[in-house]
Structure formats: C-alpha cells, structure tokens
Length: 383
Image (tube, rainbow, N blue to C red; front, side):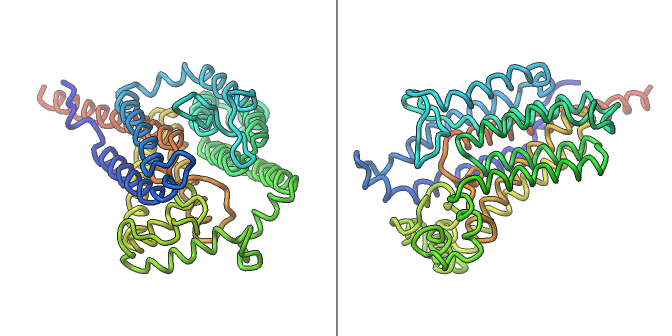
C-alpha cells in the first residue's frame, strides 16, 4: 500500500489551524498598530513584524513536526525535560533573563525573546504521556504507579512560580490531573491529588498581597475601577461597543490605550469590539473544531502513549482558551494566559502550532493504520 499525501493528512485540522492563526495575525496587527506608534522607536508594524517572523518559524516547524513520528518523543522525553528545567532556570540568569512588569519569564536571544514556560507545557505533556503509558499495568497503585512523575511536576511548578506565573503553573497542574485520570488511576487517588493541587494553589495565591487582589478583583471590578478592575471594565466596554457585528476592522476605540494588553491577553475584547459577536463566534467555532478533532484523534489512537499525548495537547489548549475567555469576560481571575493562535506572543504561537503538528501526526498515523487494516481485509476477501 502506497503512502498518499492527500489522503493521509488531517486536512480539516491543518486548514482550521492555519485559518485561525492567519486571523490571529490580522487581529494582532489591528490591536497593536497604535501601540507601535508611541514606542521609543516608533514603528506601527513593530509587533506584527515580530509576530510574522514567529509565524514563519512556527509554520516551518509545523510541517516538519507533522511528518516526524510521534512515537520517537518517548525516547526524547528525558532530554526534553532536562532542557525544559534548564530553560526555566536560565530566566533567572542576569543578562539572559528579561524582567517585564516584575515578572522574569523570558530569555533574551537578541532579535527573538522566548518564554520557556510555554515550551515546558508541551514538555510535561510528553513526559507524563510517556511515563503513564508505561505504568498501565500498575496505574492503580499510587506509590508505584501514580506518584513518581508527580515529584517532577511539583518541582517544575515551583520553578514556574518563582518567575512568578501562577496561571501557567496552574494549567500544568490541571493537565497533570486530567492525564492521571485518563491513565486509569483510582478515584480516591484523583480526589487526593485534586485536594493537594487546590492547596498548592491557595498557598501560592495567598503568599503575595497582589495575587489576592488579582484573584478576587474579577468578582467586583467596579470596586477598584482604576487599578485591579481596570482591565475587566475596559473589556466590558469593548464587548458592549461591538454588539453583534462590531464597529469594523481596525475601528476599536479601547485599543487606543484604554484597554491594557489589548494585543495579548485581552485581544478577544478587541475582536468583540471590531467584529462583534460574529467574530467571537468564529474564533470559538474554530477552536471547538480543533479540540473536537483532537478528542477524536486521541480516542481512535490505539497506542497508549499517542492517546495520552493527544489528550494532553487538547487539555492544555482547552484550559488556555477557558482561562483567557474567562478573564476577558470577568468570569475568572486574570491569569495572563494568551488565547491560543490569536494573542500576540511568539513562544505561545510556536508551541501551539508544534503541539497541533504532533496531533496531526497522530491523526495521520491513525488514518494510515485504518487504511492498512482495510487493505488487509480486502486482500483476505479477494484471496
């Protein structure tokens, strides 16, 4: 049976991914144009130029990774984890780490600036999928089956909290819990882990006064409209201004320095203002299609590692979507989590496209196995 490029690739996943990424580029340009003009070195195209470079690199990476056998990541898992931990440490090295608004989350590489925690998200998914796929025979034993990988998860959580980045650290904990669940762990183990995770979240949330304010301000943003409630209130105004069909592409008022982080964390509010509810529904629909395809790919994959890997990628993207939309609409605290494929941010865009490329490779493998199975059946019937 010959390989068919046309038939073996998951074109629905690929086309939807790049359609959404292209839309994201458009909205990054629209939401950052004014901000680029008031920089020290005025350039209205500053943000979109950098994002477009990242998009080019991410596109190349996507098509390379899409044709790279996902099973090989099992062997690469230890190296991925080592590199991830080293990268998290490097953000604290003077001259390499970059401090932005009191957070040390980036490494400066000259023309590009990377955020290691974005890469760690995928690295942890690969590691957990690899370990738990090998522990299926005794996954019901907490000490032998469930606990060992969690030691590393806790260590990585601590490194990310030192940046500090509670949103990313929390998303890793949630993905870990979901992967443990889908690995087949017992309910009492899951409940215990959930209790530990919630306790960790509460401890770190209460460890700094600004975190408490940030995590509680969404409940009543109008109680502090000039500080902790500012972003949510301005987001409300943008959403209300847009209505059903929006004010028109490029016509947002809130992005003109009323809404902080309009091109990153709160880009959905700009979409709502310029393209209205219809624009938001387009994003939600495209994301829903990608996530649905991901669940189907993970369900159809007969390899435990591939199945857990697919589910982990879906969980991570879904959590980011929920956290971001929740913050923009005032339903959840502001965590600084970008909207996948839409928000400005090169590291986020690159790792999201690479993650979806891995998903596309798992899908291609599923399709080829199905075609091989049908081919074998036809041979048997014709024999």
